[in-house]
Length: 280
Image (cartoon, rainbow, N blue to C red; front, side):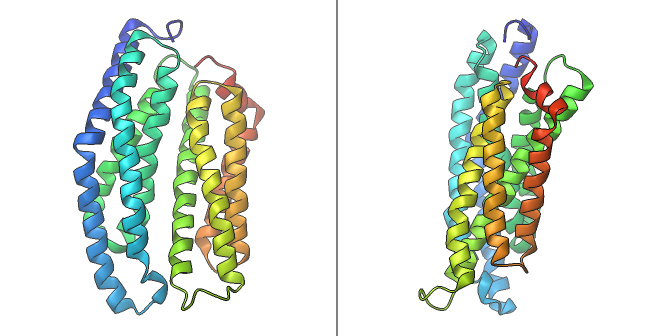
């Protein structure tokens, strides 16, 4: 990091990481609690009036995964405080690690968007703040420093698509569980429910691989590029498995399209060179 960033740059990035980390475990937990309450209250009303059995199990998903992503964001915030000092000291691993940690609250905000928009629109301002808390420092650190406009543009869209694709596809996995749990009986399983329970582990494996690829790709490592390709490829397959057994669910098709866009961006040689051909 010393070769690319000046002492002033390192100080600025350290401040950004420290502030984001501090907010992640002081302010963020309260915002998540308020957003979750608004979604559950809205779900109670909508479920009772909609007459749609497929959304009756939505509160289970909210209660299960809102705290998980919230907890991961809080943990990332604590880690960011320690990483901020390493950024200031100029340790090469610190900035990519901080970008990877900041991807967690960014994806958290994106994941929350679906339930908030459907059940708890009153919490929309809170959701926006949660998303910005991760996205602003995420892209600030990613694009910090001297680089060509083309290089920064390539990084922006690649890292944006990796995060959005991961968030959308994790949500697709949650929606699949919601609909699976809404079935009238546990067995025997028809093709639809078999598709759910087979597709969810695949799609979430891809999400994990994609998230893990972010810090390595931010470091300009070819291993990160390869892991990103693998992760997004697995996400595509998971969405495909879900779509084949549920062709009327457009969210699975959108997940496939997002994965294809991400794969194309990563596979374009000129973009790949900008991602792994420049020092991180």
